Image (cartoon, rainbow, N blue to C red; front, side, top):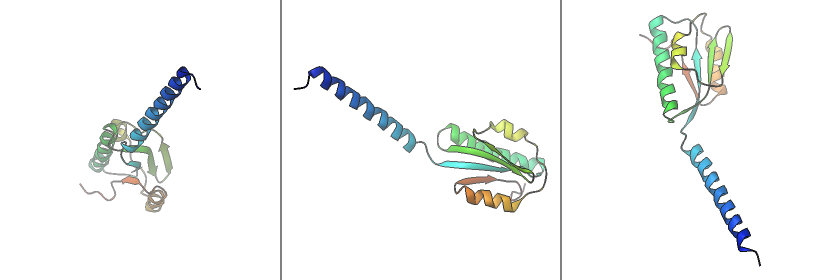
Length: 127
């Protein structure tokens, strides 16, 4: 026969493990969809870039409200790409300079690489 103390410790331990597992499960389930944000930094007119920055700001606000999770942000131009593991503040994106030409082939390749990518570019946006 087991001692009542061992049974109590076992029951409490299993209860806490179940509670922690349920907490992690709910956290993952309620976190919302995930996305990779690809920002094309090729040259834009300032008013078009403000539209791109506003679109990013909207996504960032959704992430702050836990309606969306931004896995990473990729800044892309014709010279290469920069991968940011943590989403930058919208003010930082708004302050970025744009330069160079758009690289549609690279933009499409990255979009295909990340199936849940959100692409922000001014080349398709008109003021």
